[in-house]
Structures are given as C-alpha cells and as structure tokens.
Length: 128
Image 1: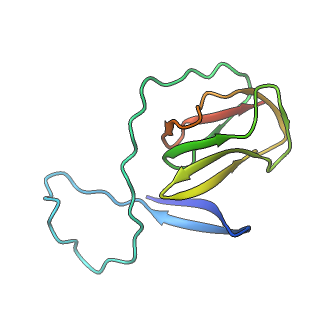
Image 2: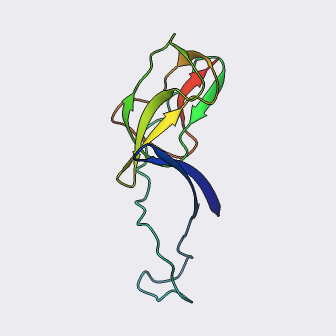
Image 3: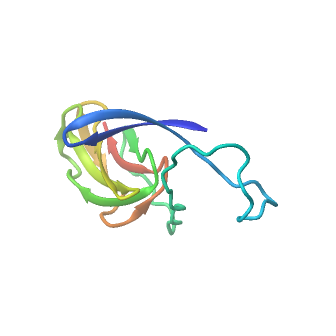
C-alpha cells in the first residue's frame, strides 16, 4: 500500500511516498526477495498500546499519520489554535515530526499522552 507523508527537514517541507512492505504467511524470514530491492527505510513494528483512550471532546480528531511515540504535546484543552499551528511532536523512525492543526479551532480533548506510543489513525487531539 502506497502512503503519503509530509516531512520537514531543516525548515524545508517535502512530500514523501512510502510503500508498506509485509511478509507473506508461510514465507521464512530468511527467504530471498523476488526481484531487485530499492533502498528501503527500516521500520519498527508498532508497539501495542494498552486500552484505547476514549475521546470525550466534540469536534474533528487529528490522528497520527504513522506509528511512533508522542514526544511532546504543545497545546492544552481549551486552547484556541490556528491552521498549521504545531499541536504535538511525534517521533517515528528516529525523526521528529510536527503534527499541525488542519484548521483553526479550539482544542476539546487530548487523548494522547506525552511519552506514550501511538499507532496509525489513533487520535492525538480533537479540534472543534
């Protein structure tokens, strides 16, 4: 599956497309891959979280675009945010990714916790 990410390196933004690779069932881990292999980034398996945190705020969820660890949460419940304002910092594959507000609004809930692992599609904050 091809997925798109926006990353920022040295204050310059890049759009990156990455293909998710998996191992077929019954294939030994040491089996050679068929065909040439392009340069691929090493990806760690997502760490399973404990119980999902229920989202209590009203509004639109801002979700994690990739699995990683929440390094910092830059907002609090009740904060008024602008479009593209940094909401949280997500570490994934040894890179710090800023998660920004998709639109202006007010933060109504923050189910993610600083230092906690997070999986793709899990809610970081809720904006109303």
